[in-house]
Image (cartoon, rainbow, N blue to C red; front, side, top):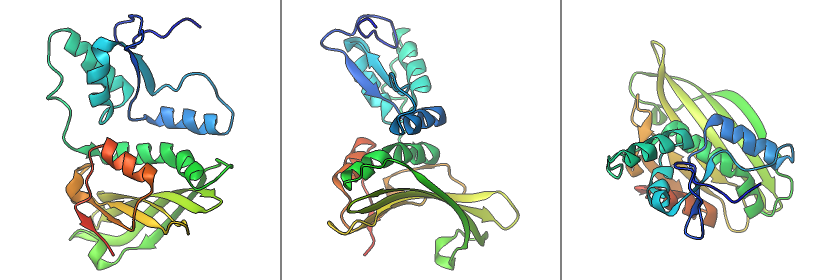
Length: 229
């Protein structure tokens, strides 16, 4: 394999180039899960080498976009259009779920885990009045992904609430750790009813998030607006 070349223009990356990690697509997540089990190798499909000319914008776009959409905007910039104002101020709920799911093996390592197997669980539950938007049903579905370490567990849950007349009312994303040392923490994302995107105003947390969780919040520009005790 030769030296890396820019994913946008094909130029040699050189010393000033950078490996830029974009928001993972579903197929990227599947690649990472296979790699964590030792069933795949090679270069992560959501991490692209970019030359000095494109790395700066690439890092900015990678906070919000997947590799395909990020490259499209970078190529548009090559045509003389400034992409700096085109990054959406909100983050998509689906993107946030994928970011957290990809980070689960890292959470396991943070908790002293050696087994990177991700356990999946699906269930329905009854949502309390204070948890649902007006007009939504109490029945909700949840899908949870969990990893374990010597000092506890980390998990990501996608909870779906439905309108009484049908259709999705809201999708919540919860991530947390039940670790004993330090104590556990949880970060909630609860968008507005009917919304598929969210901002820092929709993020709450309890406890003191782990260093990895803090890094993820900072990287994606999320500053929890409220703290639950």
